[in-house]
Length: 599
Image 1 (tube, rainbow, N blue to C red):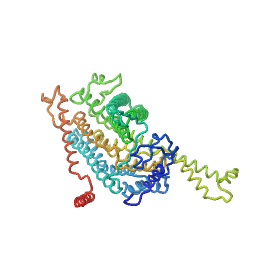
Image 2 (cartoon, helix red, strand yellow):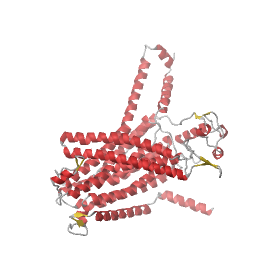
Image 3 (cartoon, one colour):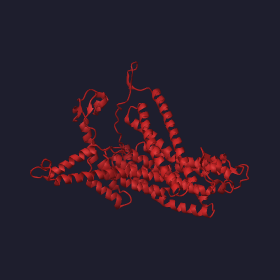
Image 4 (cartoon, rainbow, N blue to C red):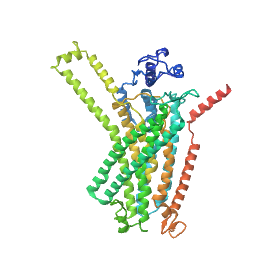
């Protein structure tokens, strides 16, 4: 705040701090009962005593800005109609009104959309090449596929480096480059007292590690349940696709399967996994809130990462390899082998088509099903709440108009309007209603929006191997996301300004996802496609590479790990060659460092 005038979001945070500070530190001390003794270091630093240390009750839950409807409508208009992407001015406006946490999220989403555009335009071109090559029995697409796969993975690294540059630029512009948020103890923290050493507040490391191991086992058990449920839904989808045609196939394979996946996995399982993960994180007994949130984010990211790619793993690493293993050299399958391709009597392959025809149709169908589910969740998360709020606002306006025109309620009319029928009173009534209405809304948190954005960026590097236009669909989803998110924030949620310097633990998740995409892409290219057989190892009689006319798994894995090593080397080159700071900012830091050395 010393470097310039505070923004509206910073003013609210200052007000919140003043309301909670003790009287002796210049605050209002809105607590009951009044301040009591607490930790000396915290008291000397001027921080308010946590409620659990004094047994008091907080009278202030949060300080938040009332929605500026004029600003929200202007932002919505600009986001929807003015340009495809957000301008720096709009990002700074979001930061000034809603705080750095919201602004960093929108800046990240906007940069991802800008970086996605060329990859999105390339997807349909690659899809056309694949279609033409397969229709003419050409190996052109198989030759290009490894390069396309590597390009997508390296694009992910390139984007993350772009984000590091953009983040550094925003940190300097918003003066949060060295910001470190203050962290208080959690009320649930159980501390021990060591009488022999005098250490008053500590928790044995062995005990926390034991709890972490137990939490890991429970998380793996939950993952096993997720795997079982997803496998059953996947088998239902495959059986419906293979056994039925026409309308029945559409109803069972698309509609029913989508309802099962949305209701069981994205509804019930996600809710239970989140609740259990939250309970496990509390059980681990972290002292500070930042440690608690980091552990919880990692657990939830593990869920979305496994769930988001589980169908891809089942199809690419299990279903397709098994079918290729049983297929004849000409790509067909005998009726006896087709009958053996069943689980609990449910058919996994009927043998009515060749393996290549089946793979071509099934790859696209599975990927499109996943993207369609994401669009459905976008509608549930962003469109439905806004429509419900709009319906409530319409009912309120109709009620107030009826009250103004009503002649059969003179006492109500007199109470609201007064003898002089002052219109200002209606403005006050509306303002009080807005305060009560927004105070009862859920606080806006970027957790679930970053949850989706991180997963979709991972899809961009992996799923195009199944369905090349995937980046285009993700680009369309993100363009809708950035526009509906501002409407959701300004309509049905209550943003509380928070100062931060980055996206938090989600940035580590992004880098993990980028490194994991290397192995996924390498294994899928070598195990699930015919690239090796038709391009590199074309002699099925070679005993070093083939057994019974099938390329051995050891050869596939060797090529996969070699391919992965080359992609990791490409990631290393990009990370070391790209500058992490803009040139102007890097020059400014060099000059500051030189001035500091002269002193």
